[in-house]
Structures are given as C-alpha cells and as structure tokens.
Image (cartoon, rainbow, N blue to C red; front, side):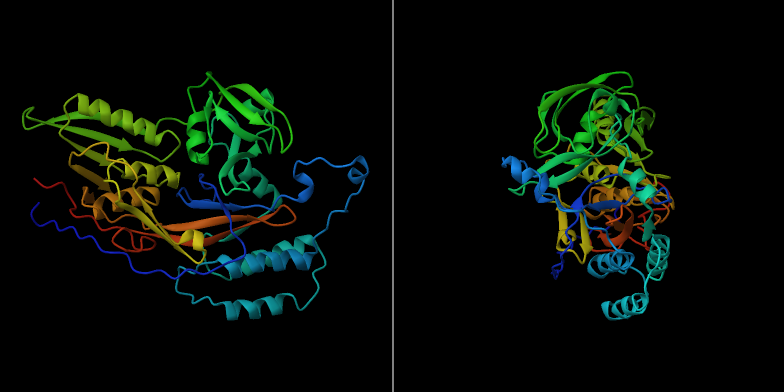
Amino acid sequence: MSGYVCLKLSPPPTCLSKHPRLPIPLVRNTLLGAALSFGLVFSFPSVSASQICRDVEPIQETLQTAPEVVTNEGLVEEAWQIVNDTFLDTGRHRWSQDTWQLKREAILSNSIQTRSKAHHIIKRMLSSLADPYTRFLSPDEFSKMARYDMTGVGINLKEVPDENGDLRLEVLGIILDGPAHSAGVRQGDEILAVNNMEVKGKSAFEVSSLLQGPNGTSVTIQVKHGNCGPVESIEVQRQLVARTPVFYRLEQLDNGVTSVGYIRLKEFNALARKDLVIAMKRLQDMGASYFILDLRDNLGGLVQAGIEIAKLFLNEGDTVIYTVGRDPQLQKAIVTDTSPLIQAPIVILVNDKTASASEIVASALHDNCRAVLVGKRTYGKGLIQSVFELDDGSGVVITVGKYVTPNHKDINGNGIEPDFQKLPA
C-alpha cells in the first residue's frame, strides 16, 4: 500500500454569529422519512416563572394570568423567524435573508383566517427553500416524534441546562401505558440516577444506553417529579430493546498464519458502541492481528453513536468531525478525548449505501491515517437538522448545519472516495 498518502490539514478560521434562538441539543434517531441519520437538535418553550419552585403567600397563588393564544399570523411569523435565524442553505439556491424578508412581507400582507391555512402557508414557505429535509410537523407528528423511544422502557430524554449551565436530563416524551409510565414515571420528570449510578454530566445518549438491557429484565430509575416534587426510585421492567447491530467472526488467512477480525456494523443504535467494544476485545483475545470493519449498506442511525465509535480508534486530540452552521453552537470541532482501544491496522468496507453516521466513522479514521477505505464512493449525507416546537404544538424541522471531515471535505452530496475498489493483494 505504498501508494496510499494521508494528509492532515489545519482547520481554517471560522466566523461565529449570534442568534437569539439557542436550541437544546438532543441526540436521537431521525423520523424524517429516509433511513438516514441526522444530528437532531430540539428547541422547546422556556420554563415560565410559575413553574419555578419557590415559597409564596397563599394570596399570591390565586393570581393567574390567562394563557396567550397565538394568532395564525403570529404562528406563521414564528416559523419564518426560525428559518431566518438558523437555516443553512447547503444547496445551490443562494438563499438570503433579504429575499426571505420579502417573502415575509408577501405572506403577512393578508390576514390568515384559519389554523389549517396557517399550517398550509408554513408548508409552502418551507418548500420554497428547496431543501429535502426541511419540513413542517403537525401537532400530532411533533407529539409522536417527542415520544420516540430509544431507551427500551418507553421514554425519550432531553438535555436541559440548569441555572449554573450544567446539563440535567428530563423526560421529554413518554409512551402511555409503556413500561416507565406504568411504573410511575411521568413526562417532565428529572432523571437523577440509573441503577444507583448518578447521571449528572452524562448526555441523553449515554443515559439511554444505561437504560437499555435484555427484554424482561429490570432497571431502577431515580426521578424527581416535576420541579418541586419528591424524589423516587422506580423499578421498571424492560419490554422493548434495540437489537445488537454487531456481527463478528475471526478469519484465518495465509494457511492460518494471519488472523483477521471481521466486524459488520449494520446500524448505529444505542447498543452499537458497547457491543462493538465487546466484539473487538473478543477478537483480540482470539489472536486478531488486524480488523475489517464492514460499513456497507449501513445507512446510519444515532449520530452520537458514530462519533463515540470513531473515538475508539483515534488518538487523544484527533479530530473526529467538524460541524458548520450559522448558530455558534454548531461551529465546533469534535475531538477525541481518550486513548484508542486498539492500535491494530483497520480496513473499512464502504459502498453507495454507507451514509451519515457511517460516513463520519469512515472519514474520521481515514483522515487521521487509522484506516484504509475499500469499496465504492459513499452516499454523501452530512446534514444536521433541528426540530423546533411552535406555539400551537406543531413544529418545523430545519437544516441548520453540516458535517465536514477532518481534512475539511464536505460530505453532503459528495460522499467519500475510497482508496481502493477491491482489497489489495
């Protein structure tokens, strides 16, 4: 493989801009139609002062403010503003805030009589962006997305910053009559510990992985009900569980002289990293001297799982991926903070159905000179979507950023070119 050249490039300077809407990050699987993975970011209405736990005089408790009812025009303008603040045009349509302002004036020049008409206008407004992943969610669709279960116990978690800027985890959605709901967990509960392990400082992805387990087993979740409620430890029986996406075997080459660890990763779910570590350790114990990681036909899954898996192979300080967007939160380099699990050579198999999280892993290992890519050019899906809730319970999914490889190549629409089409001799 003397013809293989690996270059590391220094990152270019980035220009940060300020935006009023700062979405709360939450890693989760996409429900956007295509079976590809996206980095999803959620934005929710801020907590009102009445929800903050404090001692008040009884007479103050009787003072209530009637909830504001959003107008149809206000709802359309809210959706317009989200696009104006966060949308990243990754195509060739030359979107600009000036032309978007003209669209606002045209849309709001007439009164909007019904809520369904407002929703229809938002749909047309978003479709004019010509972005295949930006779309409107009805209240029912947004509710279903919030209840999406990646934990195995029927809850969905979101990360919420506290008054000190630290992250805490709350139950965003819960499946009615699901395992957690039946045991007493409620929407809005704060998760404090899982099986006596405190979760402070952990991401939603990490805690979701802790909740996962074999079907029929139990997990103990310590929760605080609401902002002022009691703390309770609840035992929940797992009923739904992600299947392992990892399949592995040891191959003998050169009449048994060389042992190769073959690992196929079908998707990136909450079990992917944990099961991949188990597979690699077992193959090492069996004598594997190098590894083949098969990402062919892997359309993605949880982006965070892909990032964590890439870190398993990289040296501390190596860049996994860059994220680019108009929001300062999306202008960052994701860097490995641990030592590699293995130092053995790696070959990654890819094809035209290797997408998104798979492309993050492939490009991270390739650009950091940790792996050789073999097969066909990858799919080319490297966009980040955010999901914003509107005031009437509907929502919008907006493309807000994209992934760029450690060597500063745009994945989206381009894919990753492998080093070889077939395994070298």
